[in-house]
Image (cartoon, rainbow, N blue to C red; front, side, top):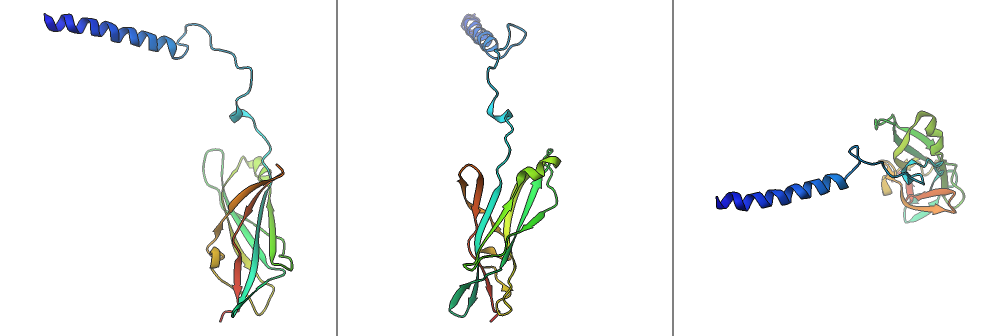
Length: 173
């Protein structure tokens, strides 16, 4: 008898909490949902910014390291479709490096949108050296295995810029 007189008030308290919880959480057919006066951020579809990739291509010959004018890097990316499936990789080449060995490549994600693709991962690789005396690619800073894009920053809200550590060709000795 003592147990039932103790349990009955506790069960009433628990039931009242459940009623309060059910009425506070969701519509459940009672009343109407509040009307939104703005569009949530995740529904806004803005045009993606172009992506810039920059770095340096250098030649290491003995103790000297010199820039390679005309060196080219390759940017290879993976994308995912609207169902989350990974696509085949695709690549772009940088413009030839200037006299200081600086290269730049531009990727336009909005060109992927007709296929509803989103960039998943990009890496930079050494592609070519115009110097006959310095054509052997090295894996310094992952020039052969692929350097992940890093050091991201926004340029005047017009481009997302990624920097890659310097790549090194050698003379093979």
